[in-house]
Amino acid sequence: LRRAHAVCPVTAVQNRYSMMARWYEPMFPVLEELNVGLVAFSPMANGLLSGRYDSHSHFEKGTDYRSIMPQFQEKNMEKNRELMHWIQELAHQKNATPAQISLAWMLCKKPWIVPIPGTTNLGRLKENGGAADIVLTLLGDTGLNVEHAADGAAAVIAARQSAYDLILMDIQMPGMNGYDATRAIRQDSLNRSTPIIAVTANAFDEDRQAAMAAGMNAHIAKPFLPETLYQTIHAWLSE
Image (cartoon, rainbow, N blue to C red; front, side):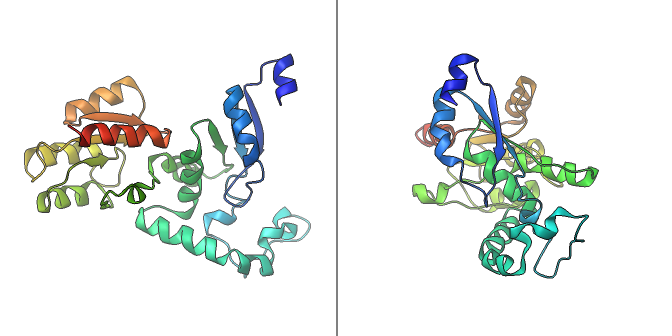
C-alpha cells in the first residue's frame, strides 16, 4: 500500500471486514498513517450476523453460494453461537436489530471505515441505515454510572424521576425524537439545566442548529473517534 500510495495517492481500499473477518486489522495503522479509508464489503458475513439464520437454515446447492460458505456449516454455526447470542442481547438492550448492531460496531471502530452492506430490499436498506443512530461505547468502563433509555419517551420519564449530571441524546428514535425529548426535559423535569449532548448521524450545520434550538448544549456527529466523545463529556462534567 505504501508503494502504491507513493506512485499515486490512494483514497481507499476495499476488503472483506466484519466481526467475523478481522484479519486486515494489522493494516489499520498504515491506513491511518496514509489517511486512506477502508471500504468494508460483506460487513455482516454474508448475512450471518443479521441473526436470521441458524443451523437449520437451508441454502440451495448450485444456486446459493452460501451453501458452501464455512460460516453457514452446522459445526461452525455452533462455534459462533456465543457471538450470535451476544449480538442479540446487545440488540435487545439498544432497541435495535442484530444487523444494526453489526454495522454500528464497525462504524464505531474507526471514522474512516465505510461498510457497504448489499440488499435489494427497501426495508433492509432502511434497517441498515438505522445503524448510524446507535452508539456503542465503553462509558461504563470509564467509571461513569450509565443508564440507558430505549427511546425519547423513556428518556423524558427517566429525566422526571432522577437528576443526572449529563445526558447523551440521540435524534432519530422511534416515537418521540431527540428534539422533542429535549424540549420536554427542559420544560418539566429534574434536569432542566443538565447538559444535553446530541450524539447523532445528523451531521449538517442545520442539524447542529436544530439541536441547539431544542435546548441541547453540544453536538457530536457520527461517526466519531471515542476520544472526541470522552473529551466532550469530560468538558461538560467539569463545568
